[in-house]
Length: 82
Image (cartoon, rainbow, N blue to C red; front, side, top):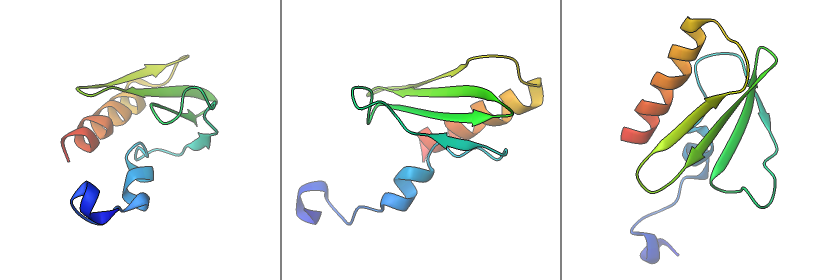
């Protein structure tokens, strides 16, 4: 498999790509959404990440402090560019 992807896969890095620097809980993705959709809960609010080939869309399904939203969005930007 390493030859197929051009190196060794690091699943810990893959799983950590949507782990913002705020307290969160990962939510099990629905089978039909995986692996393109990741959900976490931050301060009781669901945050949904949807990936496609060119972008990641972040949806905050409720109200969070602007500083928390900014931290989540910036973390997603950094993860996408890494």
